[in-house]
Every structure is written in structure tokens, then in C-alpha cells.
Amino acid sequence: MQPLANVTPLKPAARAGAIEVKNVGQVFKTRSQDVVALEDVSLEIKPGRFVVLVGPSGCGKSTLLMMMAGLRQQTAGTITINGAPILQPDPDRVGVVFQEASLFPWLTAEDNVEFPLALRGVPKAERRAKAQDALKLVGLEGFGKRHPHELSGGMKQRVSIARGLVQDPPVLLMDEPFAALDEQTRMTMGDELLRIWAATGKTVVFVTHSLTEAVYLADEVIVMSARPGRIVDHLQVQLPRPRTYEMLSGDAFGSLRDRIWRHIRKSA
Amino acid sequence: MSARISAKTLRYLIVIGLIALWELLPRTGLIPELFLPSLSSTLMAGWTEAGEYGHALGVTLYEVVVSMAFACGGGILLGAVVGSLPRPRVLIMPMISSLYAVPLVILYPVFTVWLGIGSESKIAFASIYGFLPTMLATAAGIQTIDPQLLLAARSMGAPLGQRLVRVIIPAAIPTVLSGLRVGGALVIVGVVVSEMLISSAGIGYLISRYRTILDSPHVFAGVLLVLFLAIAFNAAIRWIERKAAIWQTGTRAGQANDEIASGTMQPAT
Image 1 (tube, rainbow over the protein chains, first blue to last red):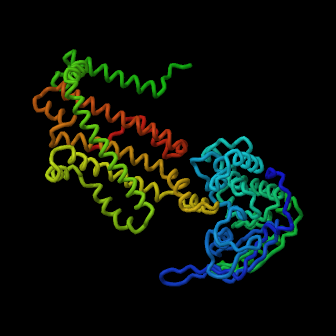
Image 2 (image 1 turned 45 degrees about the vertical axis):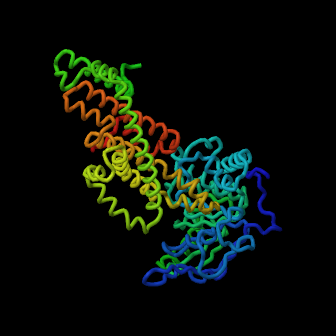
Image 3 (image 1 turned 90 degrees about the horizontal axis):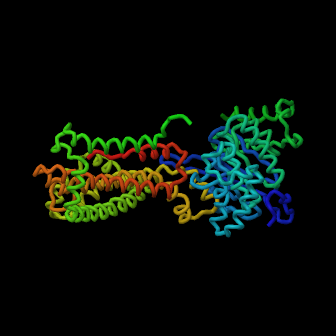
């Protein structure tokens, strides 16, 4: 096992990290009526891409993400990752990062990162080594012994990302991971995430409310409409990498953001 | 360093001061010995009747331990069920909550009719008395577990058993412990009070008996014993808290607990 920081992007033969969503629908049954949350959603995500889902509140983007994570079952269609369907959470294929850092407050940072390994009975020494690598990758070397309440909001999300990556899954799903952070931290964390993504070559699916964040981070932006949730646009962001702060005020950036905003205004 | 004294030292000084006053005020005649016998005569009274007090302490301890097992065991068990399942919660919680306001001591005479004036009626009463707060705290503790934590555990592939052991139980520990603190204290109150009301043995019984013959030093010797019992219980709970719930230091609940713990918190009867 190589240390995470030096993992080379993708073994192409395995097609690790490809996501395929086919005619997926989700209907919530309530007492009075059936609410269609998602309707006939299809999309294909190539390995190693950074894909952002945006849309108005209630468009089902988080629901779609939870279904990719196997945390929720769709009522129609199929979702496959690495070519095999996702029927339940599979930490070998998918790591998940939530909006609230959702770290266990009674565990130290390193114990939190080790948690998924402990669940499957990985020996202590191996666990510790992997957790150290993951913490190093997210820039938290030396903070392993701290408890979550001793870390800032940004650091907690870094721990959370380290936990999502510690089993080296090809796909990382992120559900508004920076929504609770202040503006400056959010910007920094965006850059950090791009650095980690570049270093690991994971497929990232990222849900956000922020259009700026969406365009800044993404290779592709998928725009969804309000209930019933459908895909209304699929943009390729051709801006060069690494992304810089200056791009935010450029014309290319602005026109992409405007295009997304027009979709969202229409459906909200 | 300046002459400022830490809160801890100050607390010790206050306790020492109170002990000194206890000895001095009756001795100098400022307070009649009938109202407050001096510390030394209280200790003397306890010492000369050591056998009697020892036996009474044994009875009371036995009742406290058995009641605590019922109150805490039952409280945690039922609290866990009520906290995790919505249907029993809807059925039971309104009843329990309204019961909480009833002065349960009115039940005690009924228990003596059912179970006699021996230990059984005290255990029954003290168990119910301590059961309610333990149960309510456990239910609240489990209900208020952040669902995100459970979702996160599930996303890492934790089956229900692992979620229970690795998430639900550790997450509920601080609230359960605060329930045990109150519930356990109430168990001690329940045992001693019921012994004082209708009974034939125990520290409460001794206090009550010596009171009727106006033997203040012996009354206070009993009071002192109950005091030690409560302090010992408090120390035990704090020890468990330190062992089991290090993580809550730094949270607001943890700090509040620390503040309460540093004073001797006693609920009213």
C-alpha cells in the first residue's frame, strides 16, 4: 500500500471512479400525495472528473448524492460505480463528506479518520499509518491528537475529508461540505480541495448552493431544476487549472455563472 | 504571584471554616447544644454507638445499592427504548412527564401496606423515585444524538450493531450520566426519607428515633453519615464521568456539569 499522498491518478484498466446514473427517479410517499423529488435523471461521470451539482433548494441534488452513496434507495433506475450497481454504502468505492463535519466528538482527529478502518477490523498499526497519511494529505499533520472541539470549522472539514479518503475509494461524494464555513475559510478550503483532488485523482461529486464555488471548482457543472428534480443543463468549465482568484472576475467565469443563474431563476 | 486564591482553595477554606464554626458555636454557648451539638460531641455520640450506626449504615447501603440497580438499570433500559422508538415514546412520555410533578412520597404509605415496613418498601419507593430522571435523561440523550453522526457511520458501512456500540452508546453517555447523577441522588433521598417515615432500621430510622427523644448528638451523627453517603456517591459519579466522557469537556454541557459537580448538588425532596 502506497502512502495516499503519492497515489498516482487512476489505473485506467480498472475504470475506477466512473459513475453512471440511468433513468433514476425518486418518489417520496406522504399521506396525502406522492412527491416526485427526482424524475428520469441520467448522467455519466468519467473517472477523475470534478463534477458539481447545483440547483435551487429542493431540487433533489442532495438526494441524488445520497443515492450515489447508497444511503438512500432510488425508486426507479440504476446507479453504477466502477460498473457495479450501488445498493448500499460501500466504503471501498465511495467516500462521503457531509455538510456538518459530522466527526465523532468523543474521538480524536486520528481516531475519527481511523473509524472506517476500525469498523472492518484493520490492525491498529496499519490504521494509524493510513490515518497519518490521510491527515498529512489534508494538511493536518500534527493535529491528530486533538478532539474536534479543539479544531476550527475548516480543520474539522479537513479531518472529514481525510476520513472520506482514508480507504482510498475512487469516488468522493461531498454534500455542501463548506456551507457552514465563513467566506474566507471557504475560499481556502476550495483551493485545498482542488490540491487534494489533483494529488489523488479521485472522481469528486460536489453539491453546493454557491454558483461561484461551482464554477471555480468544477470540470463540469450539472444544473438541476426544482421539483420534480431534473437535469436542465450540463456545462463544461473550460477554465485552465490551477484555478486562481483572478479568474473570478474574468468574462469566461462570469458568463458561465450567468448561464447557471438563468436556469435557476427560471425554475425557482 | 499575587495573593489571589484559587476557587478550589477557597472552597476548602469555606468547608474548614464551617467545620470550625460547627465546633465553636455550640461550645461558646452561642447556639444551644439541643439545636446544634458540637462536632466533637456528635462524633463522640457516633463513636459510642458505633455498632448501632454501623448496622444502620449497612441496612441503608443495601437499600441504596439495590434501589440504584433498579432505578438506573430500569431507567437506562426503558429510556433507551423510549428514546429510540417513536411509538412507545408517544404512549409513555406524556404519562411520565405528568407523573414527574407528583410528589411521589405520597406513594410510600401505600408501599408499606403492600410490602411491609422492611427494606422492600424502601427499595420500591426509592427505585421509582430515582427511576424517572434516569429514564428521562436517557431518552433525551438518545433522542438528541445528531442524526448526521449515524448517517456518517452508515456511509462508512457500519451495520446496526456497530452503530449502536460505536456511535449511539458513546454519544448518549454524557446525558445518561447526568441522569444517573440526579437519579442516584434521588435514590439516596428516597431511601433515607422513607426510613424516617415508617420503618424499623436504617440511618433514617435512627435519626427519626433519636429526634423523638431529643438526643441531638445522635441525630447529627446520623445526619453526618447521610452526608458522607451523598458525598461518596457524588465522588463516584464524577470518577465515572471522568473515565467515560472525556470528550464532553469543552462542550457547554460538559462545563455546566463541572460547575454543578463542584458544588454539592442536592435535589429537594
